[in-house]
Image (cartoon, rainbow, N blue to C red; front, side):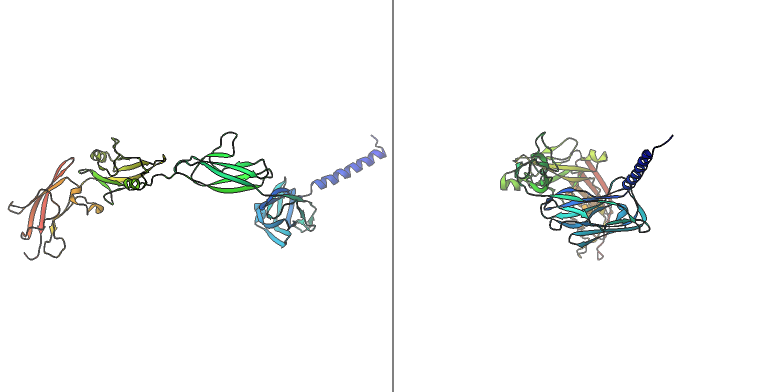
Length: 437
C-alpha cells in the first residue's frame, strides 16, 4: 500500500496532537470550588485534586479578597495530608498550604483535599485565585506541570424578619407544644427545619408535638442563607406532689402491716385549690386504692406476698391539676417479718447503761429503734425465778422492766407475741447483774 505525502503529513500532525492532548489530560488538576455564602456567616471552600499522582510535596498559595472574606482555618484535610502539612497566613489576603512527604500522593478521580473556612464580611462576588508560585513537586523536587483552576464566592446579604408564636402548650411530660412562624421580610421562598415535632402535610410554618423547654428552628431563604434560632416552648406545670411515710426507712411489718402515708396535696390546695383529683395505689395484688390525702393503709397481702418471694411494694401517688396535667410519684416500701431479739443480760445498777430488759422486734440495724408496738399488736411478757414463781408480768410490754429490785441471778421469761397473722411464743433465760446485790 502506498501513502501520499499529504496523508503521511496529516497522520504525523494527528499523532503529535493526540500525544499532546494525552499529556495535557494526564496533568494534575488542583481546583478551587466556587460556592455561595451569606454575610455575616462562614463558608468552606473546597480544594479538590484530580490525577495527582507521584507528588511528594507542594506549596499552594490562595489569594482572596480580604475586604469581603477573612481566613479562619483549614476546616478539613484529607487524612493522608493531615499528618504532614502546614498552614500559614502570609498576609491578610494570602494563605499558604505546604506539604512534604517521602510517600507520594495518589489521587485518581476528583477528590476533596482541603476545605478552607472563611468568615464572609461583605456582600459581593469576590474571586479566589491561585498565586502564580503555587506548585507541585515530585520526589526529586522536580516541578510537576499542573493545572490550577480558580473560583468565585457569591456572597449574599443575609437578612430576615420573622415572628414565632406559641399556639398550644400541653403538659410537662407530653409533647403537645405547637408553634408557628411568620416571615415578614426576606428572600422567599423559605424552607423551615424545626429539628423536632411533626408537620401536617403541605404546611411547614406550623409544627406540632414539641416537648417543653428549648427547641430549635432553622430557616433557609432562596439564596440558601441560613438563620438559626432557639425558642422556648412553655408547658403547663404538673402538680408538684410528694409522698412520704411516718418512718424514714419505710417497712411493712407482716404481723402488723399498717403504714401511715402522707402527701402535700392539702397544702397545695390550701394555696390555689389546683388539684381536684388524686389517687393512691399501694401496689397490692388486690389493686387496693385510696383517695385520702394521708391514708393509713393495711397491707392485707403482706404475709402471702413475702412467702411468695416478693420483698417490697411500689407505692404510687397520682394527681391531676385543673389544667388537665397529671403526674405520679413513687416510693418503694420493704416488707419485713418480725424477728424478736432478746438482750438477756441487763444491769440495773443506776449507771444509766443497760438498765432495762430490752427486746427488739427485728434483727435489722435500721429497725432497732422502732417501738415493739410497730411489730405486733401486743407483746405479753412473763418472768419467773428459779423456783417457778412469777416475778413480773406485762400484757403490753414496752421495754420498761428494770428488774423490780430482784436479786442478781438467772430468771426465765415467756414472751407471747400477738400479731395479725397468728400468735408466736418465745422463751428463754435472762440474767440480772447489778454487782452489788
